[in-house]
Image (tube, rainbow, N blue to C red; front, top):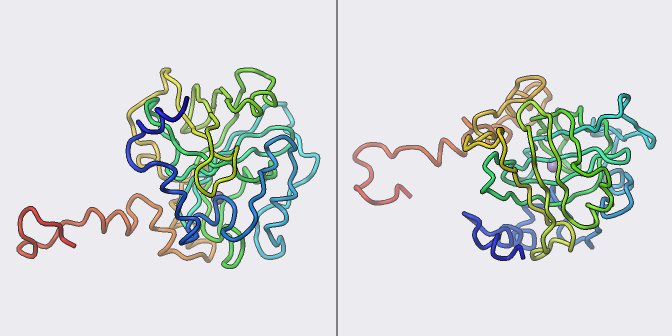
Length: 273
Ligand code: MN
């Protein structure tokens, strides 16, 4: 059912992106590690933080270890998105459920356009305290790089039986964030390449008054709490400023890609490199 939908996706096909795992390991920090036996993320039925804790040294990274009995005081459910410049830029999309944050890595980040389906790879459950984390994960640690709290708020499942819908592979919900609002859906699709079955989902905006053609990741690139860019977070927390800046809209990567060739250097109609 989803095959025609994926074929219609503009740009690269998710399967091709994932093939990089085997060769370059560029995706090491948003899914399983190349060369390691892939574990099905805990969110496929048994919410727990074992996989999360196994990957981290809490004396070294400032990320939270997480309490086992964490609860939101007023009963609302936390929603958060972290922009993470690890070995590769991605957005970690998190929804609180049963005392943990269900987590998906979204390489291109969310889109407000209902016609755009964004690949979202289910990763290990994170502690609810993680929704407050912004800073630098030291080199050598899992996910080493710079983390920005890009958006946060609350979420409401359309149907309260979230467990059934997780099993079914389709969760409809509304977001009450600062940047993302309104109706969304997360739909599981078949796996690609090295991605374990059940890990590959698509994040899609539903049509409502919050749908828009605006490129929210480019137009709202700053932290929802500190207003900092990735480079500023890296600078303040002793991280790699140059690398972090590549994830910012004014970052080197984008400037290079957009740089106009010096006049006279390049013949009309030819690429500058
Ligand atoms: Mn991440």
